[in-house]
Length: 433
Image 1: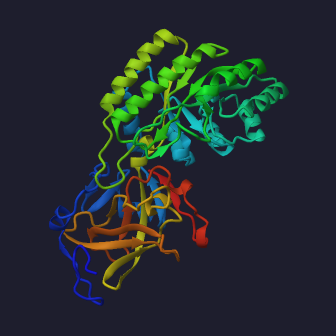
Image 2: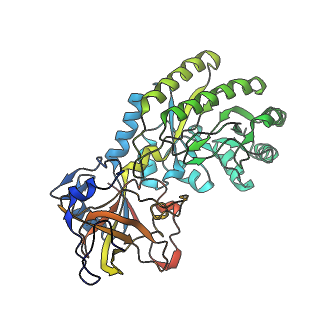
Image 3: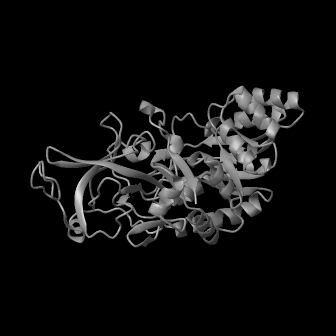
């Protein structure tokens, strides 16, 4: 089969053409990756040329996160959204300790989903009063730890109420709690739906009054509500609609609350563009919606903080995955680049982290950004499985062994969301620059 760029023979694969000509013939394209500048044909990351950064790190593959881009994203959000809105970082997106410490100084709080993430948050210096602990399967030890730490525990099951009451009694500390609601609506066009219909997360809205009564009877320190109906959404209208519905539901259920509302966490769902045809999220309609909610809450719930909880939107675009080409080969007319990293490090880029039909992340040859010749190539890792693909039939500059391949949009759900022990290869390094 002839590739998109054509070929001459199985032994001499010559698919080089003018890069502009090839790229213009293929649509739709990825959104432009403009956050990392280019100088002398190399990506610049954290002020360093890519080759110099690789030399500093010492080996490939690795993840790199750019401090300036992390800071810029928070500043952009602060400028766009209402000032009274509280911004929380969801640590599950990227729990690298140095990155969490960097974010801790710039956001209003953090959300964790395990005792391990709780330790990272506390080690980063985040005040316990600004940490919330969610998750559908918190075990008894984790609940005890959370009460002892003084963080806000998001109740997602009737089972948790007596366990928290027992921990409170044993420690002589009131368990600070909020209720996660599973609403009767979802986040339209979400990459991952986490609310609406049968879900393991939270308490069905219809049963929430019953749970609120149990919390009051158990003497727990009730503080508010939490909703998170979906993630990875690029439609501002859908996000705005979900935010409005979430706030309206809280307003309805607050009538049964055993104490005044101190916090309303409306979740997030803000997406970033990964795949061809996707465009960046427009914050303007979302900001308008949130401004209205904050103003209304100031009258209805004067003691309450309104919180949005973001993960990938804060950190996803600030990260790259960097690997090195170790071989270049042709099989039945198709060109393969074999690199020293793959799905064991970056499961999402391989398509094995929720994709139904595999689509390419934005990928580049980071050491040849100004090359004018291009070819159609499939980039694979070193694993003995056909699933180990980082880019499939993608048009890229001609690369040779030793060149550096980068996967953009790799700051979230990368290293910590991948099967690093698979086939016994070394884990990737992670650096913050």
